[in-house]
Length: 463
Image (cartoon, rainbow, N blue to C red; front, side, top):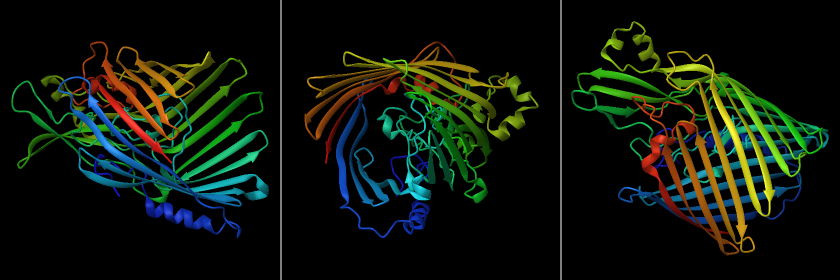
């Protein structure tokens, strides 16, 4: 069922029929052995978020219940994770299939495992960034103001892992390219305004149109492979590649004029196919530090083009081509991050330096060619680990920052209370584009959500 509170781009890979077909195709591979008793786990969680400034508007209010069913077999397991969410603001009740997977273990002489179904594929570990997370679409309906584990969405896929000594080879096939889940038009998290105010004349309405992505055809399916080598002590090295669509869209901006509707601006979330290659490394050989690094090169990412800012620009012969492509350009890009982590006296500290380079940048490109950022995370437990404090600070140099402090208290063994805040701040005096939100990098949007600073409370009962 489509989430009513999400944007029109909402399903992000939700293909229940396709997931069912993949599951059914692998059921015959399971041995005729007796299964163990299915395990039922889950949680119930009310959540409320209130704007910290302004009039203290309620930005989110919902109650979510999750039920996980896991049925293990001799050489496999079936797992289904469903969620039911009641949205207080929208007065809607939604049922979402979070995951549905079938695992088959120990094929080909015990060296190969298979998994098929609706699954969350996590390939990267950098806080707040998605450098080598090339497969999972994102839930950006509330931007980054939600638990990190909920930012990645499931995709219908089949994957195989072969264990060959010190090398693990993973291959993934995604039949239908997924799209990320975007904020609903006009919501507090929508990066595009509802209207534009010109220097003269009435406001020009801005309209969100359905997303633009490749057709669901076999020729448009996606493939990915990752090779992980653990031949060095306490060290893992991985190489990966993916061919498919980018997970974060660009936003095509096209002015339209008609007798019935007059002048308006259409904003279309747009995806393009590209090839990405990357590498990751993690080592604990430099005790007490754990070091991680990841980098990825993409052949084409969507970046904003300079929009006309004077009447003379309308005479430019290149304007027609710019309007045709929606003022978005395809450019190659490189992203990289280096993380150092250390645990001392109960304090866990992670520091990350990351950067994004738009290659072949010229005067057409409105985005910065190089975007450096720093990320810090601190975690500490108190009172015999019943109270946990955590703070994240994501600073995009020269643009903005995002701070996310929180406290989690274990009221009972299965009952946790979390309170925290989400703070967004714009830095510098860089002019905003005509239609904000045109960058393909989420961490460049912090300044847009300055008014969305919030405090929240989450109570979770697990069973």
